[in-house]
Every structure is written in C-alpha cells, then in structure tokens.
Image (cartoon, rainbow, N blue to C red; front, side, top):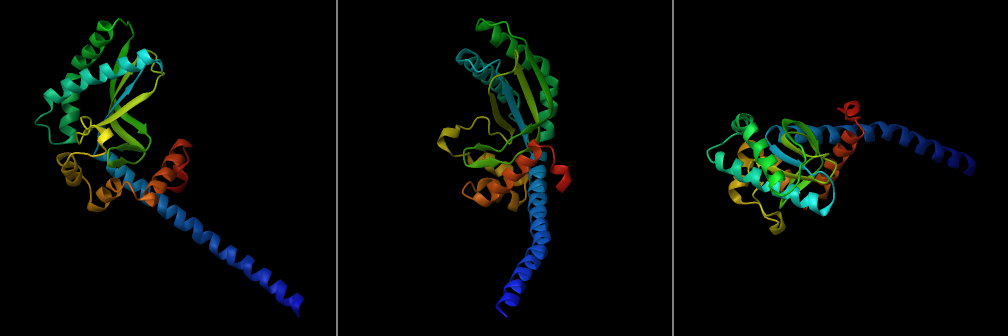
Length: 221
C-alpha cells in the first residue's frame, strides 16, 4: 500500500510539472512581450545623443566631454522652440555639417587630429538611468558622434525630451522635462520609467536587454 501511494505521489508531481511547464512558458512570453512593447513605444517617443571616445585614456575621455559640451551648447541654442521629436530630427539633419565642424574644431583646438563622424540613425541602447527616470533597453533614434577609433567608453543623454541638461548626480529630472514625457507616453508607461524602486519592472527590462544582446528576442515576440 505504501509502495502504491509513493508511486502515485511521484506520478502526480510529474503530471503537475508537465501541466505547469507550458503555463510558466506562457507567462514568461507574455511578460517579455509586454515589456518589449513598452520599450518600443517609449523608444518611438525619445531621441538620444551618443558620443563615443577614441579610447578609454583620461585624455580621450576628457576630449569626449568637451566635444559633447560644445555640441549640446549649439543644439540648445537652436532648439528652444522645438516641441516634437520629428522637429528636432529635422533641425539636426539641417545642421549636421555645422555640428560636425564644431566637433572637428573642438578636437583640433585641444591638440588632437582625430577624425570625427556624426550620424543620425537607429541604434541599440542598454537600460539607462537619468536621475529618477529609467529608460528601458531598445533601439532608439539618436545622433551618434564617433571620435577617432571610437573604442572608448560611451556617453549617452536624451535630447528629446530634453534630459541632456539634467545633472544626474542630483537624482532629479526637472518637472518640465517630465511633463513632456507624460505628454508623449501613456500614464502606465510613464509610471514604469519613473518608478526607479520597482525591481519587477527593472527585471522585465533586463530580460528584454538580454534577449536583444543574444539577438533571440524574435523567438518570443
């Protein structure tokens, strides 16, 4: 009798796992699909700046920041009236030769002869914190600046909505920048990226990031 009961117990547990495994897979796929959809919609409403240094040397990293500062200063001077991502891209496309010249002059003025290239495109970004705002991983439209060999550490910021001028060391994004985000995202999406204490959301974003890095997200999406 004890032998029969023991065998039935084993069979029931096997049946339980057989029945639960598809449910676990289904829940996983739903979670990843939901996170991917949120990431894509957020990316559709954001434009970023990506500056890549020649190398990781202290000198090259400092030069990267000087190039960044001068580019942002000019962009800030021509984008006061911009109220949409599309307008910003249009302005940047028109001023791309000027921005490239600013970058080249900054490099030369600081005693370097590196080449520099600027490109507006769609690029992969990891999860990134901007003060109390967290942007999920994904492919974002961005202005990419590559200095020299472009083998050094990257520097990112968000040009639309304007978060590039935020001092992230304070951990606070200005309310006017948040308002622009709110206008372009659903209430649920804004809550997700502004709730930096939500470990569950960050875990879902990390899953999406891992799948993107391995280029297998298409299996689940």
